[in-house]
Image: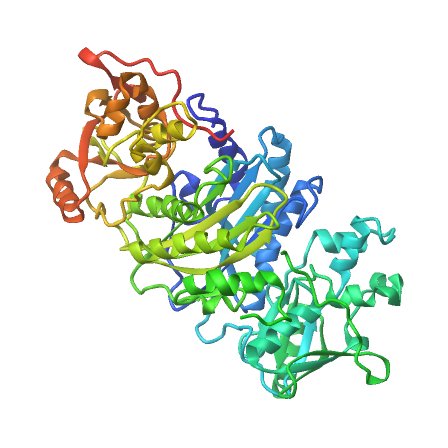
Length: 319
Length: 319
C-alpha cells in the first residue's frame, strides 16, 4: 500500500478508492473493469458531471459532495425504473488537495453504496489547475420492456411527482444568503438529494424523468418528447413545511428552480392505484399535480382561480 | 432544433452531439441510454479524464482533443483485448466557448467513431469556471475468458511492445519548445494517439496494459501485478526515425515519458508465433524488448554492455 516505487496517485487510489471497489472492478488494479451482464436484463447507463462553483461549493463537506455525485446519477436511474449495479468515476482535483478531502469524499460514497446497493467499478484520478471536477457514469439494470422514458405519455395521463418540489432551489437561496431558514432543512435538501431508487414505476408510468432543472422546464421536456401539452395546478404542487414557511414570494423559485431530484411521471388513470401501491411499498409519497393533454404544446401553470401564472423563467440552463 | 423554449445547452447537444449518437442512445433525448448487452459477451469498462493544461493544451485543435479523448480510452480497451461498443462523455467548458470549438470537437469524435467502430450513448454538458474538463467512459465487449489483465505473466514470458516508444513524450517536449522537430511527426504523435484496437491478444498475451505513464513505470505495474521482475534492453526498445534523430540525450525521456498509447504485453515463448500472426493480420508492428523473471522485483533497463541504466525518474504521476 505504501510501495515507494509507486507514484502518489496510486497510493491515493489504494487508500481511498480501493475500499469502494466491488465485483468486476478487479480491485482497481487494472485499467478496466470486467462485467458479466446479469442474464435477461437490459443495461441503463447515464453520466453526470459536477464542478465546484457550479454544482456545489468548493468548501461543502466532502462526504456530501461524494454523496451528491452518486445520488444525482442514482436519480436518473430511478427515473428509468432501473436498479443500480455499479459506477465509474473520474476525479480531477487541484494539487495539494488534502488527504482528508479524499477520505471524506470516499466516506460519503461508501455510505451511499451501502444505502443504494452499488459499487465502484473503475475510473481515473487526475490533477487540475481549476476547480474540482467530478464525473460519474452509473450502470443499472432493468427488465426488458419495463424501462421508462421521456416519451410515451398520452392525452389524459396524470402528471405526478414524488416527495416535495422546490426544497433544493430554496436551499440554494439559503446557501447564497438570500433566504433564512434556521433549521437547515432546505440547505440539506440542496446539498443532499434523495434519489427515489426503489419506486417500481416500470409498467406503471407511461413516461418519466427526474426533476433536476426545475419542474416547469422538465415537464416541458416530457411534453415535447410525447407531443403533448400539460396543465398543472400550482396549489397542488407538494411543498415541504419549510418551503411553505418561506412564503408565496418564493413560489416561482419552487416551480422553476432546480435540484429537486424527485421523479416526474406520466401515469394513465387506470394505473393510479398501481402507482399508489408501488409508492406505499417504497414509502415514497406521490402526488398528482395535473394532466397531460393533446391541445397546445407547452406547460401551463394554473394559479388561483385557474388563471395561468406568468413565470419569468422556465428553468435552469448551464449556458 | 431551434425551439426557443429550450435552453442553449439543449440546442448545443442537438447541433453537435446528437449526430454522434448510436443504438441505445435514444438519440440523447432521454436521461439515460438503454443497452442490450451482446449475448455471450462480457463487458469491459474504463474511464479517463482529460483537463486542459494537464492532458492537452487549451488551444490545441478541438478535433484533435476529441480524438485524443476517445483514443486514450480505446487504448485501454485494446490492452484488454476488447472491441469498442459505445461511450458516455461529460464535457465541462467555460461559458462563451465558441460554437466552432464544439463543432470541431464533435467532428474529431465523428471521425474516430467511424474509424474504430463505436457510437455515443449519452453524457452531460455543463459549464465550468475553470479549464475545459472532459471525461469519457467507454464500453467494450470481449469473449469470456479472453480478456487480458495486468496480472497473469509468468517467469520467462517475453516483454513485448507495439509500434515505437517515446514519440509522445518527445512530442510533448516539442510542444513545450524544448525540442525542435520540423516535420511535425513527434508533435502529432503527442496530440493524436494511435490506439492498437484490433490486435487480437486474447489467448496470446498472458498479461498486458497500454503504455500511458511511461514504459518503465507501466512495466513496473505489470511486474508488481504478476509478482515478477523484468529486464529490458534499451537498445531493443523500438524508436521512430524522428525519435532516433533527436539523439541519445532523449533516451531517458523515451523510456520514462508518457503518452505512448502502445500496448505492453507479456507473451509466453510458445505463443510468440501466434502474436506475430495476429500482429501481421492487424498490420501492427510488435517487438520483443525483454523478459519477465521470478528474481528481484522491479524493472532493470540494460544499457550498453548489459549494464543497468540509472534512470532518475520512473514515469509520470499526476500528484
